[in-house]
Image (cartoon, rainbow, N blue to C red; front, side, top):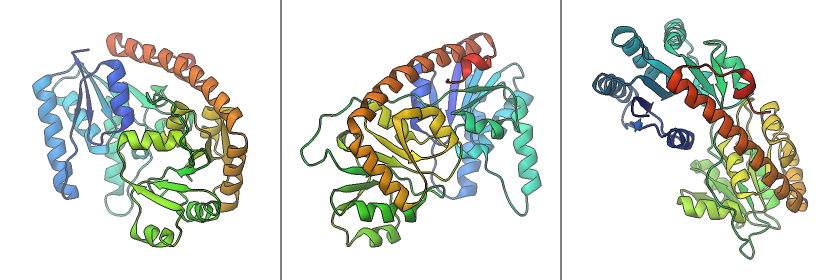
Length: 332
């Protein structure tokens, strides 16, 4: 699709995967530096790229100012361009408090007027998307191409907590559960842990903070685990670790939310965001590991078929401007 471009200021696995499946050139910019300098430079860079390349279709990984830049381009330079905004992140829900709140909200609403199609990752995000547009297609994250791993001796009963240490994660409860579980097994916690977290787990020899690991090491870690754990306090959030659990067919323990139940159905173990419930969920996942792996394989086949249908619908919109229907856009 040489007349289509995908722009991103915050490169994600979903963006790389979807743009690759669509064969759409991905042009990404991840600048460092201060907030004002970084956003101003990215804003000007975006306008420069669009004016130079003059695409017929623009797809973006949604960022507030990135869409404002695209809105200006469509309004002032090329009105016939079609715009697709992939709004799978928390940026869709984000607002501003205090001074500038009304201006922020106005510009956010106004910029969505240029969006011809809004992509969201699950039904739980629809209420947020409907505040800005009713042209919506649900496309979950693609299941990553990660092969199931063979078991390494001593790791078949390990537990891996996949963490980003964001505000929506019950970090204290996770650490409490990890401490209790480490009495009879190795517990790994991924992500960049804060100093306070490192101090908390330092006396616990079987709780291991992985920090940054290579993709191959990470795939091996989660493929060899007895179960994968990822919790969130945010409704409508489907963590990337869940898709990874499906890919490597590792039992998955996660928060009991509507969005997560709708996607994973009977292939996951659901818990409350407290340490006792998390511990119980891990024990259930380890006890029922064989059955959960079978359910994961069945779910993987079903979701991959639905993803192929959703991508066909999106390709038709990119090429012809045909809006997706609800029946083909949403997983069942």
